[in-house]
Image 1 (spheres, rainbow, N blue to C red):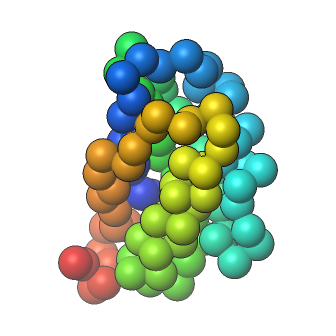
Image 2 (cartoon, rainbow, N blue to C red; image 1 turned 90 degrees about the vertical axis):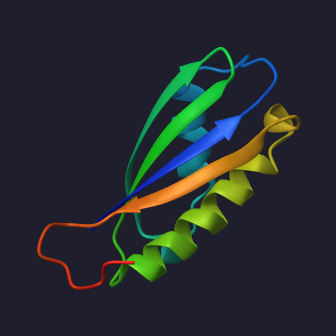
Length: 97
């Protein structure tokens, strides 16, 4: 399991964390390996934590990128952008990048 943090920015956030959680779940493909999502919104966007079941950090990062970009295709997020994405690796993992 890998944790990927993402930040989506917008000029003015008009959606709820629950909406973004649902959008992430609905946007995920089976190969993304999405196990859980946590979102916190603020006036300028949202921080999203994706829990992805992937064999490596690189695979998790690629899955997160695909998923976050699919989310940004939603009409409700037409003025949003991906500000950044970073992975957190389990302790003792030699797949540190």
